[in-house]
Length: 405
Image (tube, rainbow, N blue to C red; front, side, top):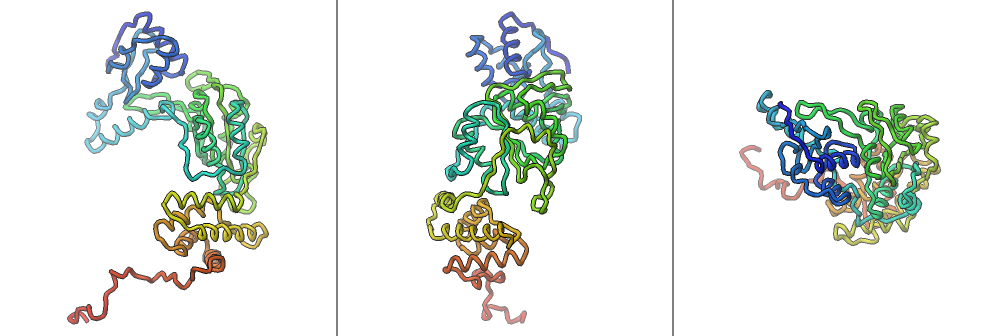
């Protein structure tokens, strides 16, 4: 592909230099163009947004960072010509996906959930985020008790941008800090989610961090509040004011002795030491949990206070038995919400409970179902017959074709 040589005047060069310094990338969005124009009074940049030479995707524009010329973004059409027709749509889709990374998103503020009820460490987490002080925070607790949701909804209430990364044992420096991606036959650097969050001054949520391997150690300097050197492109990135890191885990980074959270790892002590504060998240109180379930019921335009009350009592008994060592499984708040969702679909209380506890082994499942029938006297476990058939599918004896008898 031939390079397009376009001479820039002094004002255009000033805009390019300012935009590149502000965002640290040679690809910017229309919103970022407007932001630079307003902030630095560098208006009149139709030469950039109206020229196909600089178009890098939908709403994306490539800056001529050398001040004189620009190599236009690879055109997907030129790639298609060398590929079988069956692969053309796939290449085009990959091109669009790669150009729509978090770094080009206009707004990463989470949406408020109407069913959310604050509890536990919510106020403390919100105060940390609100302070805009860099203060890495570690939150630990059993599965399904609202650890992640508390962070998301804190950002939603404070209108703070959130970049969420779900950690696995395979997560490495390339996934976190960024790397080179192949776009339409060209190798292009793309910032990772950690760098995006740093540049935006956003909250970085490292979800399930205890699943990570030692490859997560690339975050050490960032956890100290310092910038990070991207050695692959020779660039140093410093965090913008307001940037912070919050990590969630089912363990405290010491592994899982009972095997409940298989795959969790023992995290490096030096890594854990860089989190100055740890919150232990418990399940909500019965009162709060009942309010959560009623909010979910309201979302489906359902009303049955007794049902939600019975579910909360049932879960509370199971949790107490679990903490006493009587059972190996627990009913999380998340699973109670699943039951309400199932009830909205099937309109049958016991069936809703059944399908949501089928994930447990038979003994545990049956004991949980039996306990629910004792808590809710209005249901009978004998009403659950897996062999039931829809009435309209039943063939009556007098309807059987005598020829085939």
